[in-house]
Length: 172
Image (cartoon, rainbow, N blue to C red; front, side, top):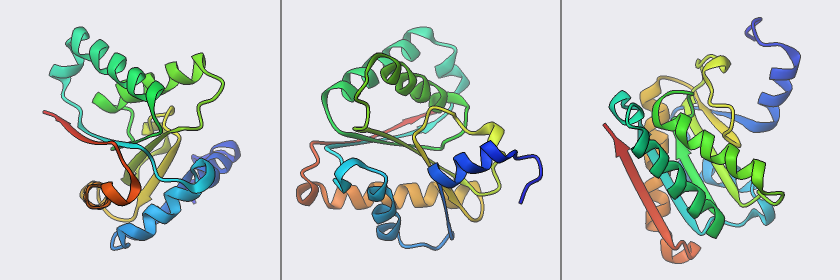
């Protein structure tokens, strides 16, 4: 155990994080994610955001539009968001939109923001407004690979899950 993590951080991590091996089957991770959702139901929409370009973040219009679009999507449907989970780049904007929504709404159990990151990531680098984290043993590439497999899994199950939208957005 990392001695830099205090007891409150450890309790938080136990409740909102799962640690998985890098070769875990993506369906097993999906079943774990379902345990965190109300009524163990799949989402109506899945949004996967990747990237963290400083060019994007330096453009206040783009950041504002992203947050506004996210808030509209969050308001209208049961949503799962997948990101890299760290407090950098576009992931920070996602976290800010999630926080803004939660501050304005009592009922916010239909939004799930999952960060996928390597187990070795320092807790200080985690974007704090995500609802849950999947900590993958191995490298950042392994965490990204698992997120990609889950995204593909959802895409293949759109009809089964009655998912209305599946959006993948990369910022470079």
